[in-house]
Length: 395
Image (cartoon, rainbow, N blue to C red; front, side, top):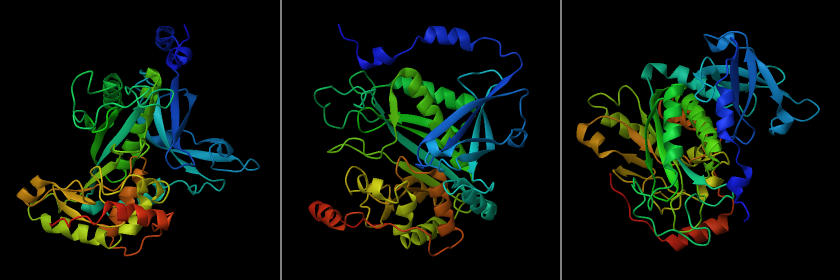
């Protein structure tokens, strides 16, 4: 009998667990992690340290072959890794660590694909406002053949409806992966605040936050690294594609919850409305910051269907999941709290998202450096005309 792909490419975890438990003889394995030239994929490699570092500054600057990550040319291929955050390693345990890094060019300046540095500068400018973020990371589990995990190989599961926050083998697929990832995040010190099955079968969500300032981007990227590594252990794929399955299925986003200290205190509702009004004036610019392709990925997701607003039109509403911005019902009742930007895609760069939000709402920058233009205007117009005019959502 022919083996399936998972059996064919699986390894013996029992043997691995025996060896991973061996004494490392006072040496520390440091897993250096960085974002590659795609703006959405992670890379990592390991080096041995002779002692445990107390701060990122105790760690050596390292380098990698940027010509293999779309970040340099072969004739000048070294890109440097500057450690910026340390986390306990839930895979190797003991003194071993994960090291989140910024990328630097051959002049030791931020690489053009390094969006963290500018985000950190913006967060320093607005630190007195104590901006808190919480990001809701949606993802889809795939089998090793790229087929949605748990779906029939020669057909489709039943329509959406029973899967969201579902319980039971006929409603959820891959819970072992989800639970293992949750615990790995807790061990690593990532401020993961919850998880749930999503609307499309095989799709899940977890939430990270609240995190203040640059911590939001750092922790979300590390949580993504842990997600991919945990999925690797199970022999499955966790994709952050914002529309992995075409048709009448939900896409995947990274809804971003935002508040400042004023918004979180009594009377903060007017601050929330003020921020939303500022966001309404720079909708096209923010769309360009909310996925790694300048809006092209979100064109597949933000159609006005499946709990999204149309990509071409800004809207907001209380408790509305078909708006660009949702104000939670409890925030309206209390008169203070937070708002949710539902536009960022599942594969967004959290540094770009949080930076753009604070530049617009707190620094009052009227014009951002990017703007969104539909890639295929005629196709986009036809798509919008097929959907028809959506009813206006009242505040």
